[in-house]
Length: 420
Ligand SMILES: [Zn+2]
Image 1 (cartoon, rainbow, N blue to C red):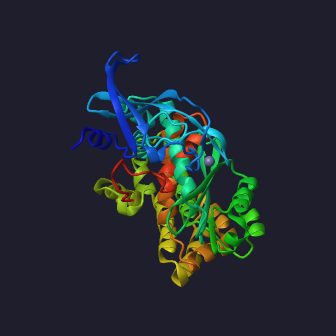
Image 2: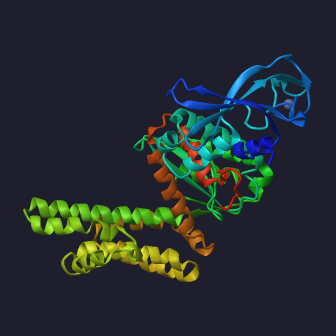
Image 3: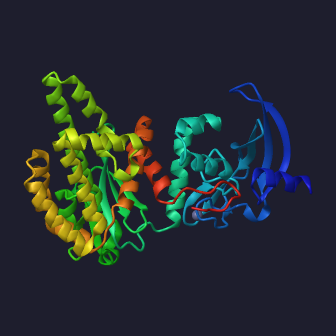
């Protein structure tokens, strides 16, 4: 194998000529770095970095610039090349295209794709340390990769059923409005804020034709979502996302449990209070996720804490309503409403009223077979992200991270094919 080809393979760049190499002591950590002097192959020279069109040269001589490449073992590798500007009829005077890096990048494609791949799977601080760079660089790289990949596809194409949801971040002080393709679970759009403006902007971007193709919009019942949807897309079937209804019931069980615990403690009944405290996960978790010990706890509540146990059963029965769907689901819902309205547990009487109010939306959900699983997994994932992105200052960082992991914009590792 000729040395040039070997070097190109090692660097992961094909349309490039390696002219020479030298070693240099790094200013940052006083270790040897490998500097490779490179230039684009003839066919790749003199092209606009945005449209890749062949253009008239603007500079006679270029400026030397460096790009960080992936390390070779423990050695840092940088590419160095002269960068010239060209005069593009469409984009004006602009930096010429180089085959190893994105425009404005200071890292090679291989390095940037590796950063993005890792960031989809680990905290930015871990990625930064592992690849010997900064969190700021990681964030800028991920933004560039996401923007480039988002520009290559149309995220709004082919939408039929879209879920609209809000995600709280910064301890619930700020919100993102997320639009999710209900059929695939793909995050279509994430935008700052939660008001009718954000919904209007989404419909503006979607356009008239694609709006007509929408069939269902499951959401959480909030007026700021349902109001604009009714105006902008009057033909769609509005539904209540089952995920939210079950979450309301889970919250109600939590309140019953806390109320009971407080009463027992106030009455000096510490033994029983700590028993109730132990029930926390048993009553809030889905039955299929319970451990053996939690099952025993649940059996004990059935005997000693009738009220808490009934609250638990009410929550589980509501889950059964959405699991059944269709006609059976409707019948179960009617039964549930009667039971809850008469259960004498204030939290559930209140919930029954709310559900009664949304009954027509819930019927749509049941009739059109919208399941809970997908929105639940997307929602859980985004919540995890908000915690991971907590250190980031701007909502843009969170949006970028959400798009990277949930909109199928994550690149494969260099030289590997995409599997997911
Ligand atoms: Zn151009």
